[in-house]
Length: 343
Image (cartoon, rainbow, N blue to C red; front, side, top):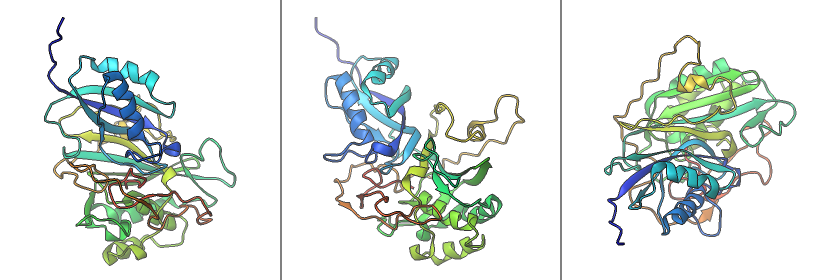
């Protein structure tokens, strides 16, 4: 019996992963990547090589709770069939947590988008083995109020030249931050950054800069001077990759998938809506008017693989300063995931 060819379908995945043992999102020769594992699993189900495209190319060591990815298929497997099959085919440190069919004209690299990243610090004299992979330890009690005052200078659209990697190749450094808040829960301090897209290392540099304020090294007003300088050398250090997580990616006209579980902090419901029984909080306004042609977004055409090399000043993000041999390495030159963290 001859099978009738199926019309192509575009499938949207929500992907979670522990970035510790990945060399970023983007496929690279001879290293383990999120995209590589995902393509291998989907290709096995399809019986052919399948190209998977992501919403952002996270760097080596960066985590994701709600990364978005798409692939096109002419096969007959239903969305839930992929979800069940990928459970057994993917490694333990990553998972597809939601799947749906989207319109054929949906293009993940160019569709208007809003992204939320979270950077996490924890205050402790001793290492916490259950937090060490996902947060940056500081011996000092952070001044969250001062960090929030400093964060106000970064809201809105600005030239973020002082907050991008020295080798960032984007033609313009103008980006928009819609929400930037610092929250404490016991000894955990989280920094949430929301916007349509970011420059190379931008979120990690923002985190490293606000850390200097939280430690009492810089006044909150210094952030305005750093922003105005448009000079990378005036900003703070690039906080380490392991403290960063891509929490969710939301596209205009596409119903969002809620990432499962909490990301370390009990204040997690503040991101997705109030907890049951809690007083309602105003929902953040998601402004999709700006397309995300930014560093962390995958361009329409895939760039050539970038060579490995040294990156912009990678720091511990910890008051003790960088530790020898602990900076992450990764390619320079194209959107993150080649070993560069996005923001």
